[in-house]
Image (cartoon, rainbow, N blue to C red):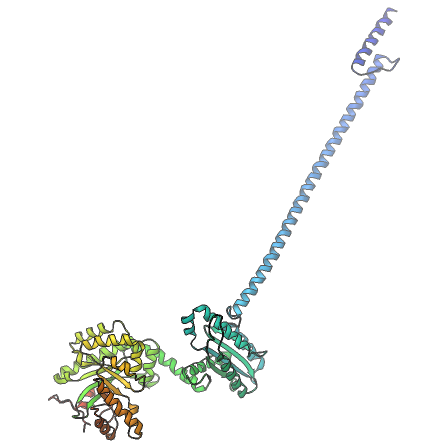
Length: 545
């Protein structure tokens, strides 16, 4: 009885503790049963916890895998987006590159100012046309060079010059047929090509171009500009359709038109090519000739008609080309001037003439009464070191200034008249005398003549040689002689070839004569004999009568 009471008290005590802990016991169950049940419940809970841990690990692994896949997807999306952006950039770059290529192609093939074909594209297109029409076709090519374009630039500025070029391009487009080619070759030079049926059609074509160029062009803010242009035309000949040859021949014809102020266009002739070849050879050889002074001097006397004595000796240049033979002075001197060699050539010529004069005076002391005349061109006269050079040359050779005469034409003097007057005055102060050459063929302005510090007036041979057959020329020649004396100038008759001319000039009062009647130009070694110089120093030409 007491035992059971003790157990019961213990159970009740345990039950109370369990209740405090939130646990309940089933009625009639023992503590052992309850403990077993608790342990079973704990075991179940532990198993559930283990299962939950396992499930959590599985879920975490799956979550990690999903995160990995998500990151991979994100990376793929980022790569795809970047690739897309790159693709768009590449496409944009391709578009820009295509646009740039089109622009470069346009710039490479067209003139940026006028929009016409440029030189390169014109030549290439010309080759294509020539190939297309074959040897049976007739291709006409015109080269156009604007007249006075530099004057427009200098007067109104380059902006107006550019506007003028644009207007010319528009005018040329106005006469363009469907298959024609038009180009601006550069500067103020244009080209026009057309396939024609006949030469007469080609002539009409170039005439039309010339007429279009004569139409005054209106530029904003300015009065109409009368430009004009020189046109050269070349056609395929004998089945020859070489575009390079056509362009060259048209260019040659254009320069011929430019030289001929009375003709606005010129059709190419084979003779032009021969002349161009000769001109090229002259220019190539004359440089060396001037540098080495292979151009020799001959001398022609200017004689007093009253006593036959030699007063002056004109130094005349002569040159034999190694390939062309003897070349006329006008031709090779024009080449020298065109190449800008006049100053160098003039100084060497003057030096050689003065050295020769020194030798003659040493051999014939009374030769000091004779002077050597040297021809000058305008570039030499405008040489800023000319006066000093001549002074030094005369001093080095111990020559008196009166031993030298400088000859200049009217046109040379008028290049810069005020400068010419100043230089000639300085030369005259040194004792050097001045002769105006070829009078009557240039401007012959009396106002200029009155201001020139000169000593001689040379009457051009065109008057002298025609005065016996043309009364008006005879009277004009007499007037020139009288005019010379009015201005205190000594007249010299050039080109005297017969006694009748000599007699007329003497009648007019012209005493100094030059021409084949007295002597042809002679080599320096032959001058003493030609002039009759002897040991008694009597200087009289053998032909003087």
